[in-house]
Amino acid sequence: MTLTQEVLRDRVADRIRVSRPDCSGRDLSTYARLLSVQREADEDGGPVAVSVLARFDPVSWIRGTCAFAMGLAGEPVAAWRRSFTRTIFLAGNPANLAGRFDFAHVAEDGSAAWTAPAAQAATDTLRRLLKIFEGTAELPTRDELLVRLPGRNADPVRRTLYLTTAGMTVAGCLVHLNHLLVEAVLDGLLRPGDELLVRQVPRLVGIGERFDALRIGPDPAGIDRLRAFGGLTEEVRCG
Image 1 (cartoon, helix red, strand yellow):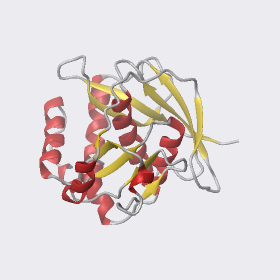
Image 2 (cartoon, helix red, strand yellow):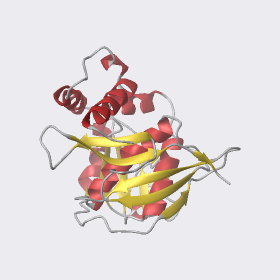
Image 3 (cartoon, rainbow, N blue to C red):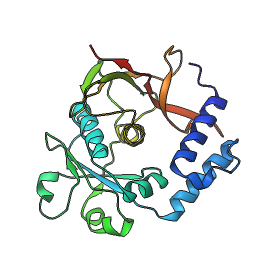
């Protein structure tokens, strides 16, 4: 699948229309118009989720992120989607915060926890207590990983999750991967018991597979250009 700038713009426009149906009639054909919708969402001050991380373990974090998203429902989720699933990452030990803050999900190994999407003011106390998770180190190169999502379903599938590493920090990876996984869950692409084959590549170039979901944002290396930072391929049946 060749990810031209036209393809990337179309995918971003599709994401906007799904997340914000009120924008369905707008002209979203140019880079500037796509970014203006994102700026409007930021200015709206919609709900945010908060993730507290003691450490970043890829397998645990992927499982935890998907389990968190699978446990969400109702209007708060729709409102969060309209703010493009904005999430703030803070550095801290969830175990030290137990009883003081209400987490919607805690990772099985305790390495991370998530609050349900809420108005930004509702997160002020937690955000004042903890610092932003900086994660400025480059994303470490890892071998291929197979991650099985929590839970079961009668017909699990496997997808390949591609993560790009060129110029990517740990914090940057968290942001892009969070949006990709959460929105794939909310769209029904990822379900309990599904499998993810995680592969790292410098860029999503020369990959012959089709992508059912992409994480796309401004390309730091180019003016008025988009870049795909990660992608989920079409499904194959497990077993």
